[in-house]
Length: 101
Image 1 (cartoon, rainbow, N blue to C red):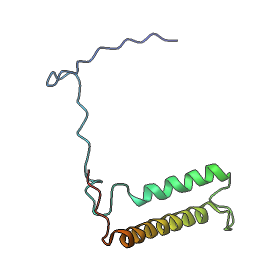
Image 2: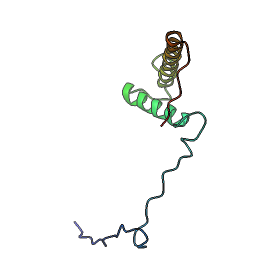
Image 3: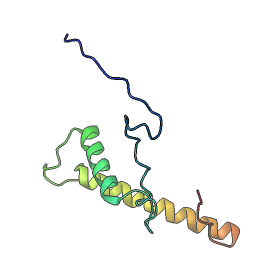
């Protein structure tokens, strides 16, 4: 093991020895459609399904194909979300208020 030396950094604002982390970007949160880009969800879902099922994305298309499973999961999720909103409207007589942070 090679010994290393490190110079302690000051976290005092304005000291010039350490760069403060930039402020978190609100660009994604301010999008009209929501907070997380759909491409990220699609990739994460497909990668998780490939890992869980052990099949490859380039396998022949069947009902066990990762892309088919992901698409089916999204369709079922949307159906449950729409059914929930419909039931809310029936029970309360008005649509649900949007969530605020």
